[in-house]
Image (cartoon, rainbow, N blue to C red; front, side, top):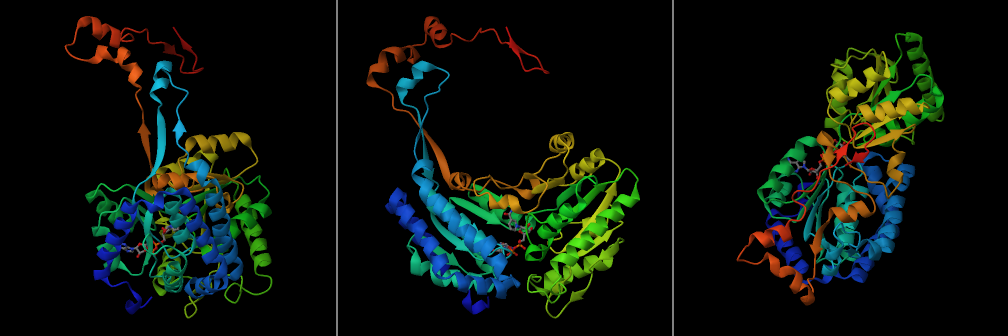
Amino acid sequence: MNETSHTPIEKIPEIHSKLKATFRTRRTISIPWRQQQLLLVARMVQDNKDLFAEALFKDVGKPAMEAYSYEISPILERVIIAATNLPEWAKPEHKTDLFDPHQRAWSPKVYFVPKGVALVIVPWNFPLILAIQPLVAAISAGCCCAVKASEIAPHTGRLLAELVPKYLDTEAYQVILGAVPETTKILELKWDHIFYTGNGHVGRIVSAAAAKHLTPLTLELGGKSPVILDPSYDLDVAAYRIMYGKVTNCGQICVAPDYLIVPTNGNHDLLNKVVEAFRRAYASFFSDAPPLESTSYARIVSKNHFDRLNTLLARTDGTTVLGGQVDAKRLKIEPTVVIGIQPDDALMESELFGPILPIIEVGTFEDACELVSQRDHPLVLYAFTQSEDTKTTIRECTTSGNLVYNDTFIQLAIAELPFGGVGESGHGRQGGRYSFESFSYLRASIDMPLGSEQFLTVRYPPYTSENLKLLNPNVDIKIPQCSPTTGIMKG
Ligand code: NAD
């Protein structure tokens, strides 16, 4: 994106005011209207699918297979899910399962209400789906929305800015193009929800700006997502599935397996077997052409990111056992496996976000869990094992946004699962109904019948000891005891 295509900074407050004014007209509240706009999003993506695939190729060398499978098709599927289910999602909840049955007469309900005017800030690695998915959520919830596309994926950003006004209501939905100065201006304004996807450093800037206006926030961040590999698992299957998560989009995925932990109990031969399995997977994936030439392999997005990864490869104390070749001109790095990694190695400093897989050997599964727990909570924890006991140990001893056994990356294919981080990997959830809820707030409501007045007079002054007793029948209630092992309550 060159600077001339950026949205002029002085226009940004105007866009914001226009969206606010549209929201006040309440036209985005109507469910059929939202459904119609949602389906127009699908139409926009479908009518222009080849243009989007071309833009994604220009931005990050994304092969068409990846552009269609991980951006274009899932958008179509998810928009249809949202448009179809919206009437159900948006239905007010009638609370009939109340603890205190006489309160049922008060008609307690929960309404899902649009928060207002939302801001979506998009990263470069999946610049289409990570723009459209939150936009779809905002539309579903009944919000107006500004989408700030990523300047590092300029072709996709420009295409979105050109097409959104042709398909959607421009008074309700806008795309803003720009980099740090434009985003800084955007963040000065008061939004009703901010949905940020990107790195934790900028996540802190966005959080600080949101805090000034007490604006609620979804932070979809990243971090180092580990893989724990049980050496008794089928190593060929594991290598294929791990390598798949590492080579897709050239490892530039928030949920890419970042590093591999192998509990070998001191049996180093097991590690050799793991490396051999990776060699076989690698040979199979790139049987038509080596990775630097392969049309099945994307590139690194920019020179900055290429240099960052290359510097890490130069600084690591580990040994490269697979890959390692680079092509600076075309910003390509081979899938690279590095062994002999210590937890303080350069490759373990921060999220790799590239096709490098460091392998750390530890003694036991408990050691593996301890290693994961000593670090920031990851977005995903992957574990390859057939043992139910090991699965339980790993689940109970670690914290991560999502937990995936025996595959990588594929969890994102389930549109209805809540996706998001914990701690340093972010907060808030997206996916199906969860996305809708992120842009809605729960407006609890009651409607007190006139006829209830006779039961309510006890609350009015002048206060008496008799009314105090009537209002607080439970104040001396016997509190039961609970067994910490069985959970059985007694007394
Ligand atoms: P990026 O550089 O495109 O930045 C993201 C957005 O922040 C852009 O729109 C950019 O304009 C804006 N921005 C950058 N600097 C800013 C500043 N100083 N002030 C205000 N706004 C600023 O993308 P990125 O952050 O490099 O994306 C990669 C990161 O995103 C990785 O950490 C990855 O794990 C994470 N990610 C997370 C998810 C998820 O769903 N959890 C998905 C994709 C990527």
